[in-house]
Image (cartoon, rainbow, N blue to C red; front, top):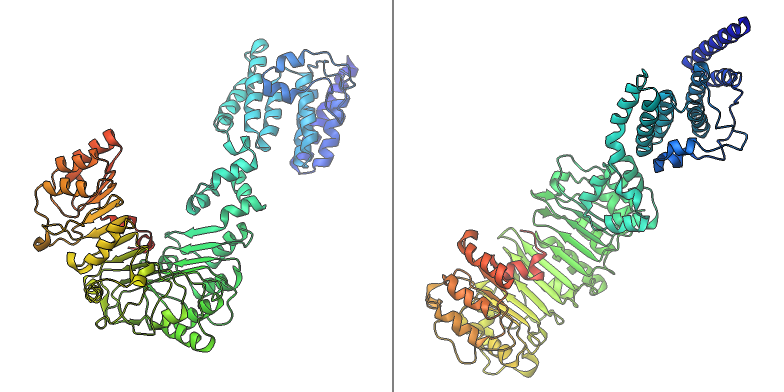
Length: 617
């Protein structure tokens, strides 16, 4: 009896000393003493360096069969079927597992925690330790399962155990994280990339804040992950976007950013250092787009430009300067295919004229050119553009712009032209600056320009063969009906015209019909002197003249819902109108529910024309 008391006293002293070592962060000394106390227990089970080979507690817990697993016979040296009721033995193993974990030996700590469950399956302390080791490894679901099965086993034999409430508390504490599963953990990387690829840049950035595992995945490198960051659209935000942000996101893309859009350079506070770094360091950039909600002066840059852009876009409020424009244009001269400047001034024309005089046509690969200006006093001579960009196929001129042209100004390969509302002619047209014979899309939304071109066309009774618009598919204008009657008649009679926007007079000529026309816009600029009479008969007349019509734009016409319903019944899929949204609400719901058709508030040209949709409001 005395020897047993001496052994118990000695074990208690060693446990106390081991705990003191642990509290002093002497984890190695603490582990030695904890192990000595455990190995000297009368049960004879020593702490091994490996877990039992006959049983797998982790798998059993995951499958919910822990009790059945514990009842299996052990035939290995672990002796996991031996039970021990010594509190000092369990306390020593608990302290040993904790000391191993503090030393960073997680695997050894797990082996010790498993042996605690083998020795005392009805002891809550065993499950508390095992569950904690799962939690520190972020295996919250496994920890939750451990607590649940521990509660079940302890409650059967010892429902009044003082540590049982603690086991319940830990179960409740881990419930949310255990049941809130991460969907990314259940799918392969390839599938995760396909999912993230559906998100826009802003949403992808928000995903970085979901969890550490998500951030690690999205910034961990690899070509598949880097491809997600190659298109970067910086939307306006409350905080400025610094050079550090641009560098970080470029790093996520492996410095392979192909498209960069800064939607509000003013609010983002785009500075000289950031723009200089973008131009000099993001060498694989193909598309650069700068916009601003307020007037923003483009920083002045000098030096070298390593960009080889295919698309360059400066928005309406971006004020350019000679140095930066020259740097970017010359750097991308051999690759630039699309150029948009919506606050154009003389700088760009001066640069192009100077470079063309020195090197010949500087932008030979340019296919799309969009120019506009906010200031009525700005005069843009389009001759330098025609000389520098001889292969332009799509041209948009919009805003408060005046343009001049002459014999040396001709976009000989132009196929698509959009002239905006406010453009005015500098002088009477004595020749076209585009080849009418090869035009595919022509939008003349300025009445003044329409009048000038119309007077030119009316000089011919019959258009020459090389001028005949045999390829013209889309044509819309704001001029009077007679100004472009030849153009309209040739397109309708040949069947090439698929879209037509025109003023419609009260009496229509017999040639104003076609089975090929799909889109018709009437009365785009409301004028009573040219208004079709405001009864419903014109709708029936137009549907007879154009039996295969799919889109009808009525502008401000006050046709009744009944007349428009007949148009929908005869195959029209979209009707555009100007007015309030609720004005046609009953017709809209009926058309959608019964025919799958749409009744849309707006102007079809400004909402469907690809050339115009590229222009910010």
